[in-house]
Length: 264
Image (cartoon, rainbow, N blue to C red; front, side):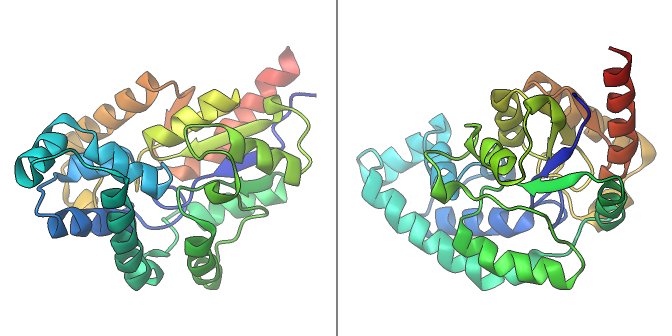
């Protein structure tokens, strides 16, 4: 009854776009246009949210809020957010096609899962219009899912559980006990936890790690272990049931879960 029949994947930083750089670059640009300095860490922290909510989350960070007040002699408002979001979309759409390469190990992992009869759903912080660019580009490189749900058609995006539940409806998955959600952001973890599904983080290629593939490969073994330990700790603190080093570990992990279910 509880056998895993569905995996719900995040997109950027989990399945495609190693390091989740497409949205990062756009967020950095729009705050630069506002003459507000934000760090890579600040830009990445809310990653996984609906993008307009991501902008608000950055603006609400105490240091960023203070910068805005000092510069503009007032608090930010919804007009500022709307203007910044419009600029964000412009920058993102200009580069989105360039950030659709599957992360190493993803294509083989998805093929293995499909051969076992597991359905592949997906959730994202991108809108449907953004995914209309991403999906065909990713498909041309071999990556497809059985179902895509975007937050703009639902009451809320992450960390609310609605996208996961919509995937379950669309794919006819009758129980949360049959679902594994995997993602690379804290918002992904919270989405899975709120949906009461088995929730996994993945480190290599993730937004939380925040490196390009070449940058990661240049690290020493000790540096890799230290960085991955930090990412793992953040994801476990957010409520992940487990954190995988790479996506390639997913089939074996699901095998183990199914064995545990059989023994209950």
